[in-house]
Image (tube, rainbow, N blue to C red; front, side, top):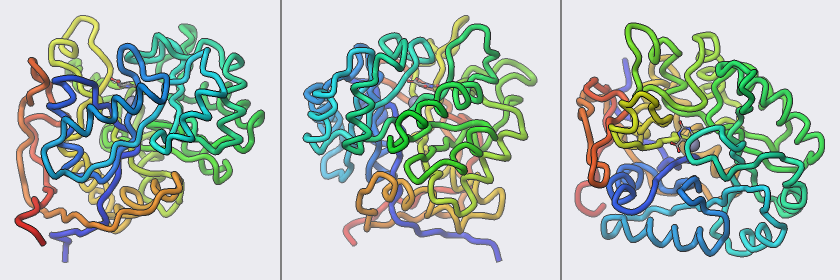
Amino acid sequence: MSTTELTIVRPDDWHLHLRDGPQLASVVRFTAQRFGRAIIMPNLNPPITTTPQALAYKARILAALPAATAFEPLMTLYLTDNTTPEIIADAVASEAVYGVKLYPAGATTNSDSGVTNLALCAPALETMAELGLPLLVHGEVVDDAVDIFDREQVFVETVLAPLLQRYPDLRVVLEHITTRQAVEFVRAAGDNVAATITPQHLMFNRNALLAGGLRPHNYCLPVLKAERHRQAVVEAATDDHPRFFLGTDSAPHAVSAKENACGCAGIFSAHAGIELYAEAFAAVGRLSRLEAFASLRGADFYKLARNTETITLEREDWRVPDALDFGAELLVPFRAGETMHWRLRRETGSG
Ligand code: DOR
Ligand code: ZN
């Protein structure tokens, strides 16, 4: 008998881009309908580099939610060459900042203020290791000499491994992993190292980007990889390892910025932020593992209480809209126009 309904503890999204202003107001409700909490990426323009900025951004996120929505944004800071130990101590004291994001300068969208040389961040990293504040890592080198499909693997070998040798207690989340090498690194690492996994890297290999035409809406960074890597990532998400968990990396861009001679990196998936994972887990007969991946392991790693509410997914077809509002523009959601087979049951009345 195939499953037709699945009730799980309300999931959390451990990697999310919400943008700001009218764009924020357009997208945040999709996440709040599904997830209890989300780790909010700080790559605004200009970036969120201090706790007062993070608290102000958190207030804007809460203000953009529909009334009576229980959703907690977990804020992060953007690491720069100039992040001081005081900035880290303030973040920890605020109890509102849950991580510090490392973007190698130039690696991706709004990463220009990112880190040019990790050695410059030594005082901040030491303090983070001491105070237990996680470093959230965009794990790609930015070297023109390195093939774009190899940038994660080279980062793991040449940046992440030495970083953890230097700071063995540093808590690290390797974000949006895409390769067998990243999976193996996290499996072999200590309890202080975890990884998030996106829906697109579970569902698609690089053919979805390049075969039969160039598909800008499947372009994100790290870029989709070969099938053997996708399989390794699926295995990591769906087995019972405690340190791989859900992070959508939902990253909205206006359609004009994606369908462009130099299109932006980023896939918007919040409109189906849990349903997509249900499909990916069902595809390998591992739906029973979805709850641990989506709702339990991330909270455990971040040392937060697990959610107590539940959500229910139903096996029912629905069509992903071709476009959604995005401030004054439109965005094209992941799998636009396609049929999804799992649907979120909407709460009816009080319960
Ligand atoms: O594809 C991506 N989009 N990767 C990132 O690292 C950033 C993100 C964004 O902010 O658009
Ligand atoms: Zn991201």
